[in-house]
Length: 88
Image (tube, rainbow, N blue to C red; front, side, top):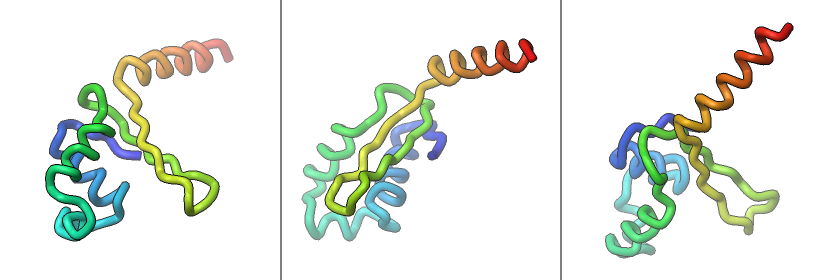
């Protein structure tokens, strides 16, 4: 889970955490720069800032899936938690 503030941080997160690489150079051995950009755009969050999560399947053949939590959803959950905390 990572707070992603902009597209540059998203790109870095995808390379390091999703693809488990230190930089893009290795990805170019099996993806062209255009294909990598297409992949990143396809999985890009709708807006920033957001919290990025990577969900892994039950087996090694299932691909990892990216998910994003946005400020409005987090604020809604925080308000619910605050109400629950105040009710005790």
